[in-house]
Image 1 (cartoon, rainbow over the protein chains, first blue to last red):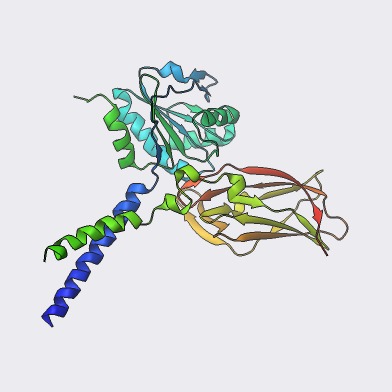
Image 2 (image 1 turned 60 degrees about the vertical axis):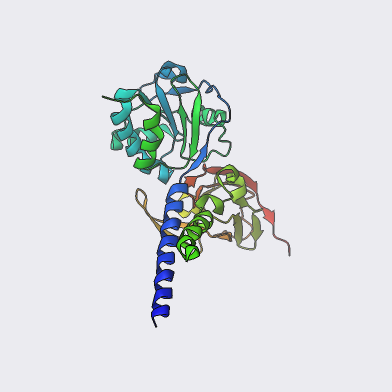
Length: 181
Length: 149
């Protein structure tokens, strides 16, 4: 009887441990289509034409940590993460972060969405421009959301395919930013 | 006794290794399929009184029902697709949507007057992968072929 109870207890511990490990692994691996360059790669110069009609270049932001986030209103995970990106811009902007959002969408949809969510970082409204830029960052399939983190020196730190939650954004950005006092 | 102490940890490592990896389902991030591969549109066939449109949808991918659009070329009377039952998903931003996937062939039927079937179609569709990425909208211009007797 005691031996049976002990066996059952061990099985319960193993089952709980295995379940926790599975949950942790899934959480860790989810949205982690990450690619880190083997050697330094200078980010390609890309152009962003905004809602205000102004054209900005990636090199205009040299000296800042830049997170280029390719998105579209027809992409649910993109829509889900954009408020978090806006929050990150607000939180880390004073420490040198700049989020850019080239959109693969029509202007009317982009404008309505940006206004609805109160997105204040520059978004791009030229579909062809965004598509060409995304392919320069090795996303040939055009899958979204797709983010590219670029150092203040203009080098690609990492590319990420899939949405990012708040914790993942923090883990991605904090180590790259100067410590705030 | 020592083995019993280490057994949970060994199982932890093993389980972590084989735990559900959503990227593995689609072959990993580096092997994400293109839209053409994930949603392969078969030749559109004309049968008496109807057209048949079929897609072979890869495992781990799905198409949004509301993103299908069909237009005859040159433009004529509006075309209305008939859909089989799909899967209802609740999306935080899009609300309840119907999707079609699950590693199966999706077959849509379009009723057309006999001898008035369009010869060419513009077909639009868009879908995503279960791992949480979406593929761009697709537009295909296809010629309708007569079904084999």
